[in-house]
Amino acid sequence: MPLRITKDDTQPSRVTLMLEGTVMLPWIDELYRECLKCSGLNTTVGVDLSGVDFVDEHGVTALRALIRLGVRLVNVPPIIDELLRESTGF
Image 1 (cartoon, rainbow, N blue to C red):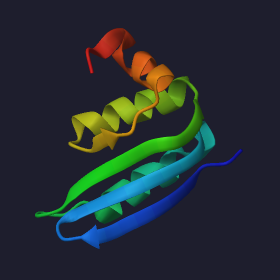
Image 2: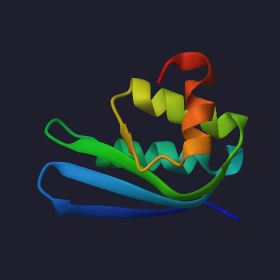
Image 3: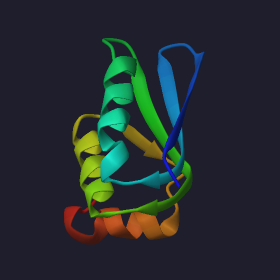
Image 4: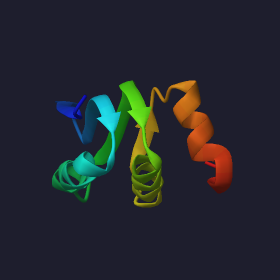
């Protein structure tokens, strides 16, 4: 299942990207692009993972990179949380 990205920008200075599907290598560039488009001087970017059903190793690496860039992950399913914590201390 491909990755679907929906933007919620109804709150001032906060944008949440809701992800549905799989976070895998073919869709990582699109995820980065969307995060970069939403980021700004006074904007907090969040990524809602509640609709994600699979993350491959490239997806885990991408999510870790987004965290380092200041993107906030929300509604992280337990299995994805465990993958993120395995070697980073997320």
